[in-house]
Length: 182
Image (cartoon, rainbow, N blue to C red; front, side, top):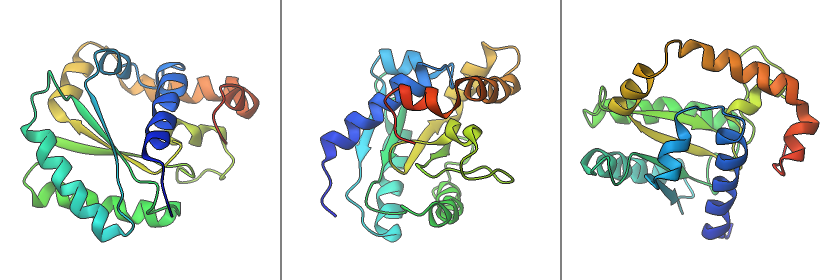
């Protein structure tokens, strides 16, 4: 598969701006985006093993980086783990890698996928769209950033509930009207 890295990054930024920030699915995303502290890495990995190796490099790089320069990293990997079940299985290996690199407590990984499906939901359930991205994507986050963000918000548990309500009100037609694929 030949990927257009610029297009994959542009599609991801459009999703971030229209869905994640535009629908306020993550109230903490806007400031890092506006301040250009998100690193976008479009991976050329075409096997899970190659992605895991690249992920190790990026985890270490983010840990070393100045948070005022790079707060978070999105590892976009359009050539590998297209199947959601394979992707979901890979998350266990990614989390184990964080531990192996002794970065647990410093970094964590959030996951997004075009076919994302919460346990107990149907594939076409609109609530799955809270974690649907244009390409399989691993979001590398600093624990310290999460702690700072949650200190500014009284009830972080309400974010998920608000996201569900937003998407149920929006519906699939509203999602598609954002110019995002289903």
